[in-house]
Structure formats: C-alpha cells, structure tokens
Length: 110
Length: 121
Image (cartoon, rainbow over all chains, first blue to last red; front, top):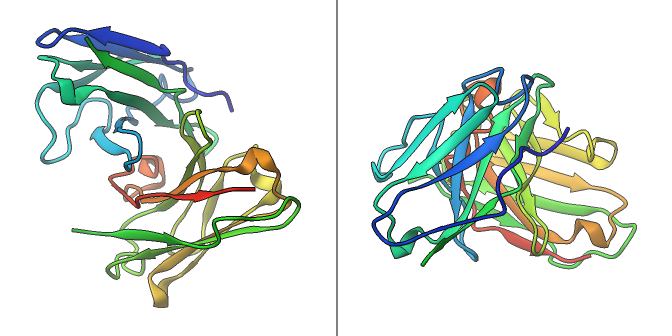
C-alpha cells in the first residue's frame, strides 16, 4: 500500500488561487470517486474540506473545490487568505478494502 | 455536535502494547450508521491510516500494521479501542480517532475527529 503522491509544498499570495495534486493508481484514486481532502493546522484536529472528490461539507468555504481526472485528484483554493496556511492531505478508499493518505502538502501564504 | 475523545497512557515502553480508547459523545456507534477509525501522525511526518471498525466488529487494517493491530468496539459504552503490540520508537505519534462515512467505501471520509493524543514509545 503506497501513499498517494502530493507535492511537498505550494505557495501563493493572498487573493491568488493554488492547486494541490494527489496522484494515485487505478486501485484507489482512479478507481473510485471516493477522494477526500483535509486541512490540518498544527496542534489541531484535521478538518474535512472535500469528500467524494468534489463535495463540500456544510460550513466549508466555497473557496475550496475538488476535482479528479484519471488517477489524479486536485484541490483548488481560490482567493487565498492567510488563514488557509496549513497542511493539506488527500485520502482515498482502495480496492484492497483499505484507506490510503497522501504524504501531505504544506501551503504557505506569502 | 458530535464529540470524540481519546484516552490512554501517553508513555509506553518498547516491546509493550499501546492501548487507547475513543469515547463517542452520543450513541451513534450502536446505531450502525458510521464507520470509526484510528489515524496517527508521527512527529514531523504526515497522516497515516491505522484502521477502521464497524459496530458489528468488522475491521479494516493497514497492511503494514496488521500483524500487531487490534481494533475493537463496545457499543454499550459508545467506545472503540486501539491495541498495537510490540511497539518501537517508530510508533511514537499523535493518535487520532475519527468518525468515517456510512459505507465501507466511505470509511475514509473522516468528518469528526478527536483532538489527538501524543503517545511516546
């Protein structure tokens, strides 16, 4: 079971948009529309921000959006704000009846 | 608002068994509407899925931990449990319990999380 691949870091200026990729295989990301994304501020519990590739839980800002093409899922954050600076993780259900996380991406708001 | 709370020793000796309890604030474990999971984060590293359980006792484990791992549930107490045997320093991490989705294909959709507890080996 290999971790999903995410860039180690991304950065953007306030107001800009950024995209974080999450690359898997046909046995996880590519095989199901069951990718979730989490925002994690150090010292706090992770927060679910996207589920089932592109759905937002109630209360999550519309600035967060998700998509998928083949074996690559993506999280886009538009109108970057200072409070968006955090670690972001994707995860997916897999064909082995398991769950796999991405390695995480550190977002820096410049 | 659903709340989850982990409890257990913060320090475990090498080769011993790490044991944690997650207490859920309502009776949603016994209603069978959700899957329940454990996740950990070693210092300076990313999140790692440990495993999930359903109220029936059906379990799903990370293959890399399976030989040392037991996750169980007590629906009468609204609790589920983690036991990891033969621990080493590599098992030092913040351990989280969380609520997953309503189907095994969505057990990875972790909407409610506990605050996390640091366990040092």
